Length: 125
Image (cartoon, helix red, strand yellow):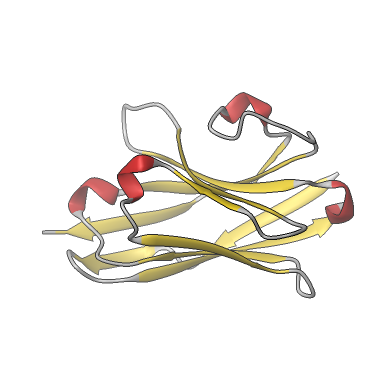
């Protein structure tokens, strides 16, 4: 089992920044990839970014457009999502997820085995 706890969400004005954190515990050594997803009210959960624990290879959704950066601290078992130039369209609950799969379809939420409880990000115009 892998336990995930997100933090860092909040209310920010358009153009502002937030850094989300995801603290992982448990069998973290068995997780190959960590991802961030988001879900706006009435919409599906969508992929935002992912990172491989070893090597740090990163993947992003097209809508990120260079505004977000995913990173990890292997020693602390924390994954971060730095979000800059936030827009009202970024308003959503952001979820951290972990997958045990070696070659998962990273944009597919069904490929992830463990999920955090989510953290709310609200961007005002």
